[in-house]
Length: 275
Length: 275
Image (tube, rainbow over the protein chains, first blue to last red):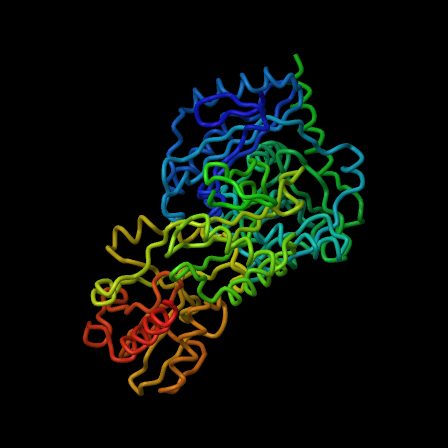
């Protein structure tokens, strides 16, 4: 039992959807993803809040309240016996009689082992490429990752770890992570629009504001090329330095002071959650 | 038995996918849709050709050949007992171990009753609105209809039957149909790029060329507003007049000569298929 489908707990092998579901027919669904630390969900309220915002923006209504979802998630974690788990909440367009219009949404919650970034990955950092693309309805956490998955062969060919989207020369986000830039003037900047506002992004912005100037605004590709530090934030990767962009070295090619500081702040927050 | 899943015929209720499928996780899948006339598939080879093109462009390889798919489709039609059926071929990114990268694709073929356009719908015609949007990877028939489904409430509010996408003032397509314009000079024009080339579109272009000048090129919204006729083509709707665009009447607000002629050509082709 490691999943919850609509009204009941089911074995993972029973986490099935009929092919008439609008996620399968038309890629129409929203989701959210969070993880646990010592069996305690991290930023649960923020993830639930965003899940409900995504659902509403997609004209989908979850049949469960935030309180009910919280209980279901806690039960899933307990049943799984996992200390470090990834919880995925999915709300689809439902079993559509005409394969085109929404019906009663299907709600699926899964709880599985999760892999997070290691100190080794932090030291090694990431090499990324830029690519011109604007996600559709970017404020919604929909399941539309068509471009991201389609680009996998290009990433392999370029030996890149991830792709940074831009449009009209302005960077927006990675497919599953937010981007931050430390300028030569030691200011922390991050895009303000046309992307999904990550929960880790919010935490990092707030923590950084304690010790440095921060700003949410448009960032050009050139500013990325000329940055002293670039890093990404995500639920599983936390805070990871980007050391190469389009084959160009960022700063001195090593994890920078601000990135390190924010990684340490994040790890301390996690340690504080250990009972 | 009205579906085929990977390697076997299954009842429709058994046409299930596990939630780890990349269609459900990331909206990553391609499909095609054709219909039968008196139990004979219409434009089967063209649809199979396009299905394989979509699959290849998405880096997905069907485990069945066109010949095998043809046999499966014929068997499905026979089993269904339907004279007029809709056949949907779906190829997904597969059961992804990391919910992000493709695995062995899942192939699902369904055969269900289909509703086609009636002479009454032809006479009534359609009222459409325009909307600024460019589909991602438009040459691929992917399951990404995020924008199309998301716009349903707007269509209802505007009392419109469908939405015509445009970008930079150039029209491209409807979510599930191609657009044609008859100019005041009695030339038939249709977009040439940034859209999916429909099978019905090809047939109509070919048939129209017999009796009038045709051209594939960029078309501005103003050309649509000033057209003598506008119509759409699709597998289920055949050739249907668009009589209102953004609340403005097209021509004299009645189905035009060219549209009627092409509808008749299409219906005669269908009648010729009756044994």
